[in-house]
Length: 357
Image 1 (spheres, rainbow, N blue to C red):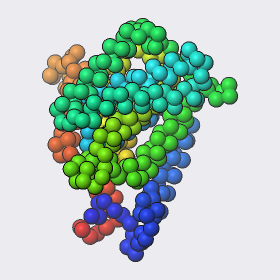
Image 2 (tube, rainbow, N blue to C red):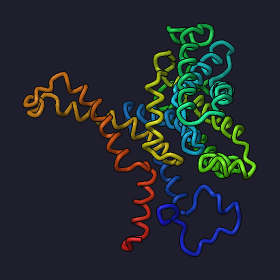
Image 3 (cartoon, rainbow, N blue to C red):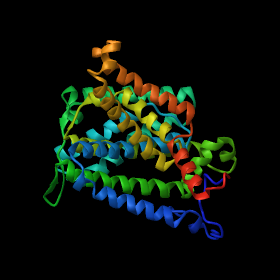
């Protein structure tokens, strides 16, 4: 289909390496490099407010990428992703605070620790599916939340714990303008890692488990192994994202990792597009920016003639939350394949214009 592939006519892929390249066309390669160049210049032109939004998109996208591997590529379901996100945040702060491990090394180590926890919960969940699997992941959410509240030695209990700022060789990234580059580096690294993973033998096995698990098993794919692996990978990216979150705020509290955040992670990957690496980033940006946009609209309406005519007054804040939910529902109704699918259609339209096919 034209919306799935924009490889120029006559460009024949005769080797496996050519067929699995990250950039199918030269145009896509140049677009990515241009986008990265613009992002690198962002701290030079944007204020602290916009940089804070970009940093949020960055660490949430890293965590949502893991959930998309689990849900979008493997066909599993998880409504406890926020708990693994929180475990990575607490683990990185614990390592740096109690063992003097530099934050540079604590972040990936927190991802490894979260992977171990994800594999523990993934072992029983790998033999479940559908509603039973959803309940199992919900149980993981509440188990880890209770652990966060009671494990004073690890999380500081209900009081929370401090997290050191990110630093390299004595240079501290303790401002938004500096920490933006840290998040950008991890974002690029994790997205390249996930993209290459999906082009590997294991990545294709995960997709086979999603598409038809009986056929995959007949082909010799170990369903339990790959379902458990998907939970471990999902937890790893969640742990990295949580660690970035912790060292950005420099404080971690139990209240920030509830079930609502898990639902928001699901919204990110559904809106962006299940089974799409690029869609994960697009969906995350949508979920972060839409509440801000609705806030601007409600601020503009407050005190206006429309506000006085409808006697909205203090109800504007509730209308903001309702409008966000309405936007998401309408989006899912009219674009269920996600933003990534719409972006592919837009690119195909301009490439094939004026032909409709």
